[in-house]
Length: 162
Image 1 (cartoon, rainbow, N blue to C red):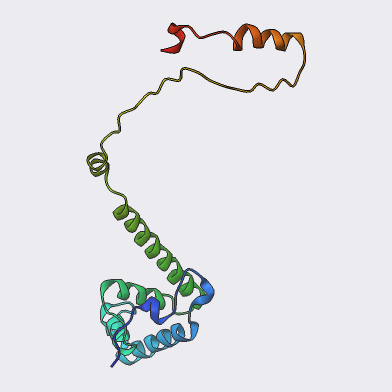
Image 2: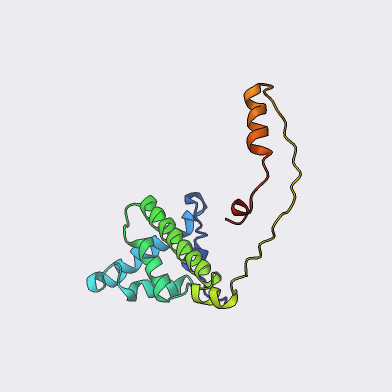
């Protein structure tokens, strides 16, 4: 006997509505209706006993998560598309939760980051000489005056160390 699989794997559910194996989903829904008609009114349609029977019949995992997923398969017996929509939504929620947990585990907490990476001391190197090129695009006296009066002025000690 093969290993039980999840409801999502059995139905080939992904984030795409088109990926669902609707034939298998319809089989589960039909088996559910047959089982309910055989047991009479003693069991509610979504009781755990009925859902566990379906899980056993289709060799599915019968943990709480998969029972909830089976419930989504059968809870609205007249609308297959609604069941498909509910299953894809549940799959997307599960993926989002898993991805969030992975990201949380991958990022260390602030206290761990602070302990792991001590602050680096800032080293300041003073530049004593600068060589630069000035391209003058406007050959006007105002521009030349600005260059000579402001840019070519030597820096004083008080302006250097501010």
